[in-house]
Image 1 (cartoon, rainbow, N blue to C red):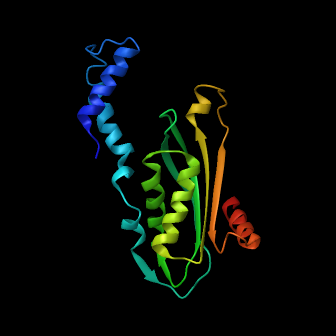
Image 2: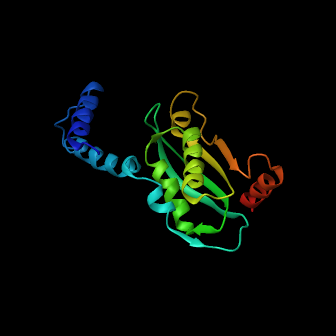
Image 3: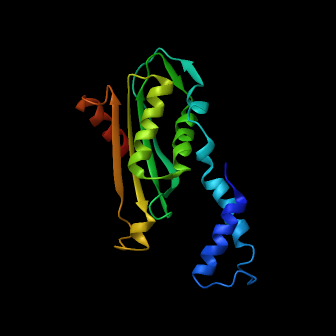
Length: 185
């Protein structure tokens, strides 16, 4: 649970630490604004992907289902700076499917946490495997990291790409190639 008071105290200390006057008109309400914003952007800390993925429907078709270009915004745990991009999720049902919005909601659960992209990619795939019990899952994430854009190496536009495979996708290059072809379209 987000503790607004602690966040407000922390933001005040941070502002003082960079030399700001915390009573200045434009800054005075910033600790409260940041606390409310953190409550929203870190809302996935208290959410469980099962809430979304356990709502299923029987399906006779067991062909690949792909939801691509799922836009997300997350926060890197190393510098607490945003990273954002698109997630592409595929699974091969084993008698049941979930509503397509549930895949996007699953991405959001993990994106709304202090996170690293590599871990987020695996968490999405593992949740789908656990709660949908499909034949296999593949997840790919492409993201720009503000810690590489605004500071350090300063390389705007560079993207980090991660992907994981589970089940039927792990050893099957044909399935992987279909996935990659489909997300390029």
